[in-house]
Image 1: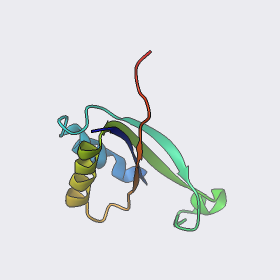
Image 2: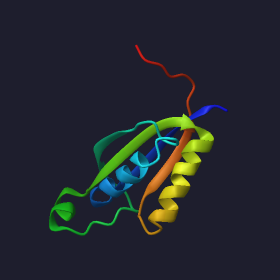
Image 3: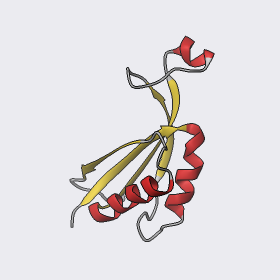
Image 4: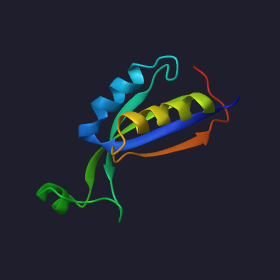
Length: 100
């Protein structure tokens, strides 16, 4: 089975819960990278005064590479544990990966 890149984008206040879920399942997710991002667009709800002024909302992005089955299982775990998470995700094929 080929590897895929799983990308999760979520409100910052949700990040710790998602990270804890992923860390609780090393059989599915052997590791991940988390970084800060800015959410833009019509689907992004600006609520705080600072968000209205800046025109974007703070987000956390988590990325992990693994088998498609494992990444789908990780997404299913998040859906089951955090059904109203307000989390956007996608999976894309990985052509090549390695360590240099």
